[in-house]
Length: 227
Image 1 (cartoon, rainbow, N blue to C red):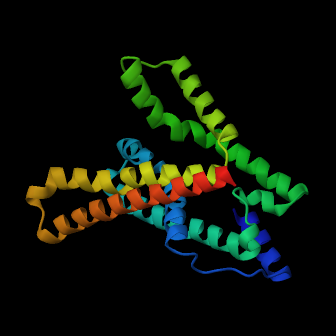
Image 2: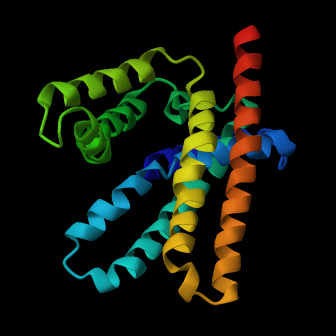
Image 3: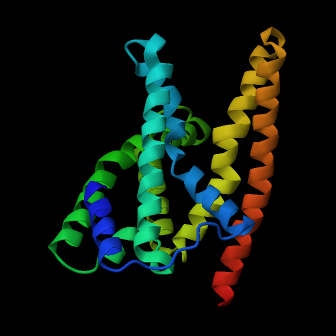
């Protein structure tokens, strides 16, 4: 990430391009879908907490980690757009052009995906095995899921549009609506009104973002496919 940020800064200093700070409500909702998808690892929170040695510090550690990642992701996205403007591609490394540096960045990305994908897929494996194989380990089911994910990455056109759709329709529910709903269901009777209000607001705002974000993403997909 640091190498790409350095290249973005170099490209921006060498040839500044015109950028638009706000592209309208549709662009904002589309961007929110992609941004929320970037935190798809939220499914790992409960397994990580279960394995934590000191669970009392897990919440603070999680909050600091999420804040740091959010800042890094935000900086990464802003600098990519500032450097390349409307020419920014779905996968920012393709904007770096040919050369050993670009190849090294892509190799590092591949290594990162190779080691992190099994971790990120673990909750999916557990759910699939619970539903389809009696909660027992099933190697062929895991292989099948990996193949399906790989085929989706290879053959889904306009992959960023697909990310925005998944982020708006699924990740918003997982990250905002369901946690607040569960918290309200379990602790609602014990909470003061500010806590109840915050949970209700999270549910309402999350549902609104999910509906309008999904609509915007589908509209973008249909426009891209018809172009």
